[in-house]
Each structure stands twice: as structure tokens, then as C-alpha cells.
Image 1 (cartoon, helix red, strand yellow):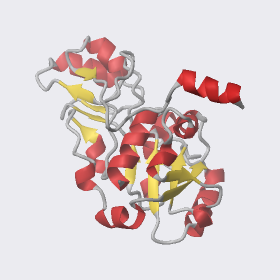
Image 2 (tube, helix red, strand yellow):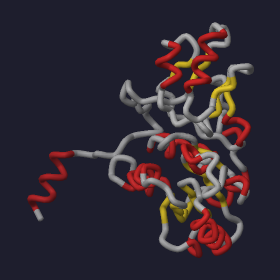
Image 3 (cartoon, helix red, strand yellow):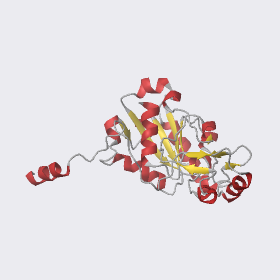
Image 4 (cartoon, one colour):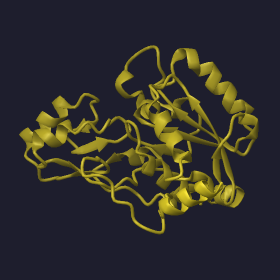
Length: 247
């Protein structure tokens, strides 16, 4: 026992001080995209044609973060003259239309549902549903329970049963085989309940968009309260979204 206490004392506190202190992610991280509206038409067209997700509208010079998998192809092709990805991980939105952007994203806290904060301010229990996900989004949600992020210190926890939950967190492209299970989980969650869509697969179908085997957007099945883009969203993106929307 003394050795354990000695070891803990030597290691110190491993938990991040976010949101009291700013977190700086690694330079290779790709967060909020910024678009130069003065970019040459040929560069914009080349980026749009190369985008594997058809996320770029060359006419409006916008990018759909719900489709984007943040691969960086457009940034490499344009050499930063059209699209650059910042290290801003606060990219979640409360309205799906806000995913279509030129780089400006509305303040999530300003769009948070006030009654949710009143209901769940000190305790939010969530049931995670992997609707045919690849496990990337799931892994970055699971890591929120580790000592560094320590999601529980904010009163937010993942629970085993939807009957014990205040809402559901959905990942994956929602395959035909998982659709019924997802809807049953939603119905088993007592009202009032929240629905959170995590990852490009859940938001738009991701790389599987166009397939008859998946649902292109959770919002076509259920009323979604919070959209968290990314492939997968960084744990800090998930944490930022949960804290700003519910706390």
C-alpha cells in the first residue's frame, strides 16, 4: 500500500486542466477548416474534384464538415491557397446546416438547449450505440473515461442500459441490420432524452454514402440535438461539445 501511494505521489495528477487551461494539440491534427474566398477558380475546382467525399461546393466555396473526413487532400492540392485546417477542435454544432461552412462556426454554447442544461446540469448519463461503426469513433469516446480526460468529473457518464440514460450517442453509418436495434434503444430511453450524432458516418454516411445498406444521416431517423463531425472526432472535440452544449 505504501508503494502504491508513493507511486501516485511521484506521478502526480494526470488529469487535464481543460477547460480551465487551453489544450494545444499536435501540429498534425486537422480541426476547423478555413476557406480563402479569393482562391483561384482552377484551384477550387481541382480540390472539389479530388475530394473523396464530395464535401466541397466549388460555386459557393464552402465545405460540408458533415461529409468531410479531414483527410487533408484539399489542403495539399491547394497548398493552403484555398483550404487550410486549423488546430481548433471546437467544431461541433447544434444545427446541421451549420456544418456547411467557410470556416466560421457558431458558438455552440449560444445554441445549446436551455432546458437541457436545467435538466442535466450536474448529471448526464449517456448510452453509446455503435451502429455498424469501424470502432474509431467508439474508441475516441471510450478514451474520455481515462484519467487524462476524466469525463466523470463533469458529471457525465456512459451507462450500460438505455433505461438508465438521459440520451444516446450514436456512431457508425447505421447499417440496415442495426437500424431496428438503434430505434429500439432510442425508444427505451426515457423522456426527455437527447440524441448526439458522432462522426461523419453518422452525420452523412461517410465513406459509405450512396450505399443502399446504410442510412445517410441520423437526422433522417431521429431528432438530433448535437452534431459532432470528424473521422473520428478527436476526444477533445467530443469533450468540448459535451461541456459547451450541456454544462
